[in-house]
Length: 188
Image 1 (cartoon, rainbow, N blue to C red):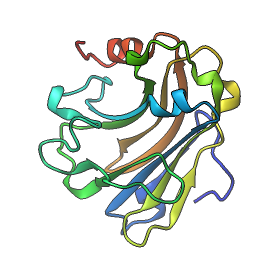
Image 2: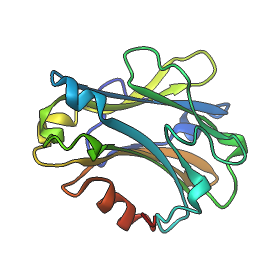
Image 3: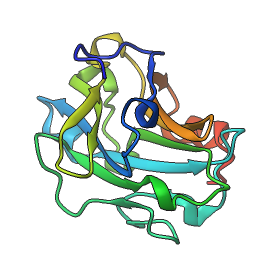
């Protein structure tokens, strides 16, 4: 596995590099000096088919739905290691219909304050081995490239040739969850 942070668009063949890898933790760090921004950050995990479409409303993991039906993807109750949120993925039990596990962040706009991801100091995603917690890969800090975005695809786990790979995405959305939902077939 690469020791240096992974750049946008790069990927790592997790199960090819670690054949006995059965589970991972996806850790998301989002940091701002703006308390209002920090209080309104939402991390969600979308379980998608090969066309990046969410399988159903039950296949979104976030603060209101802490796991998907089979419990193979679940949000950790208390994140550790400086992460805002962590998501556990049992790679062996992910339903066959799920080809991509996409981790996104967006601003909950309920407060009405005009905030953007351009105010983040840190936006990073990393992959840890569920067995023992060793960091396998980490993205570069995605925050410096952000400006007016209110939504962000951080990264994704995806099936590849019978195994699992991880890709750093870093794609921002100026229309937040609305844009993310439109691209992933989610009705709001």
